[in-house]
Length: 237
Image (cartoon, rainbow, N blue to C red):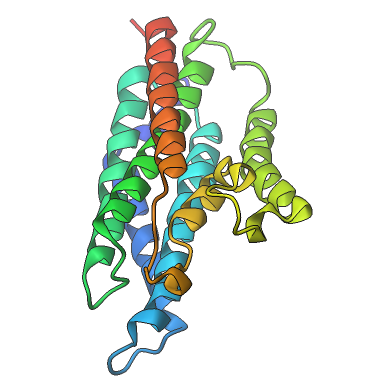
């Protein structure tokens, strides 16, 4: 009897869900280690830990999730597999974001957490779209092209190019513009821009009109791309 090529997926999606929640808990623990484990923490001190938690979450969405799936066999049901992944990634991640509106946590305005949640959803939908497109094309019994490592390099480049250009151009420090498009073009860079300290302006964080336009445009584009990938995907009979 030939070996079962899907043996590593027998526990899906429960295995992925457990790993994702464990990662988020680990991220919270790592972020909070820096602000102490005893007593109350000042809100402005805690916000730095909250930003780290958000960064860790976005790194997992854009890097670790596709890395895991690109290292595995193609799922039998491509569309449903990555739709399940999407829900398992987004819903627990929202549970990290929304408590930050509380006064005894980061005290970020609700509109910032809404924008952050939509940005998180948009990048997650784009990952699901890319994975659905990649594994849903071509014959089911053949490994898709381009090579998986090329796909992973593309994910890493998208994560790094925007912040690199932002730093090189000085856009990240330019307070005269409402949005740093270089920074926003990266998952982590965009998230950090939304939760950047705005205490000098009298706010914990803020969403500009330009931020809303970018986030909603990215969300619409990601969902459209995912829809096209689903339409073109080939499922195992």
